[in-house]
Length: 365
Image (cartoon, rainbow, N blue to C red):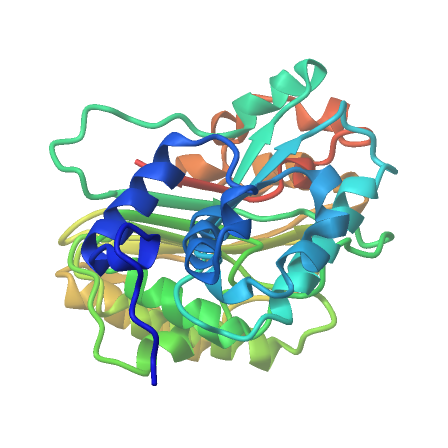
């Protein structure tokens, strides 16, 4: 036989009124710990309020797993606030703490939507790095992005990267293919490789009706890769380009110390010959199959055959960083120019502030 609530007691109130009272309490009170001891009902309400949104600093990460072990299902939003000290190349303490945080999250069982927001407060001595990000344009007629630039880390070959490789790259490429359909300009450097991008585009009948320029990096561009493999990748890119009716420029490139290479296609307009250029630090030239594939792209736009192909051999001894190679590769799009990397003379700062210091920038214009 169940006992009836005593008149005037908490449980005597209708459930709707109890919920309204508890909601008001948790909204108006700064400290909720004492409320959680009143009853299981109060504890449940306070728990949802306390753990639904969490703000962390690097100092909180060590205890994060222990404090949330029994309430993970309640967490819906995590704000990680990072206050960076003045940058030092060999200081990896922040990286280690961040790895610990992500490792903890990876062990959580999925229980619903979880949003992670990361805010970064730079040290005053590093404010010069802000110019490494392209500015946002406010004169667009639409709220939709027209230009997307993804700049990833530029790791030196003589150092192990601090972060694990990005896997699976096919999934990243597939996501990029779908997300870029409404863009006019797309440039991705060291985030998604150009190699899986054509395959990802081939999984669905995608079209890019407004895309005028496409710039991607590819780790296949290197002297250790066979010419046939490079040809295959560039030819597959041409197949994708045929679904971009306004395409004017394609740039596929790669740079690391001692190595630089770029394949550049340009469509100057109807009734005019298209252009292909290859510049690199080793002997290579697009095969006739590759040339015909890109001629088909130009002819489909009302252009003419490819003009004589430009081939230039660069001196690898002069390539120590991206800033050394970019002027020699003679890019056509602004993303590869010094202005798009903030106007910073990276050749002077490479030893102390390599381009990867800026981590990953996403710019939409």
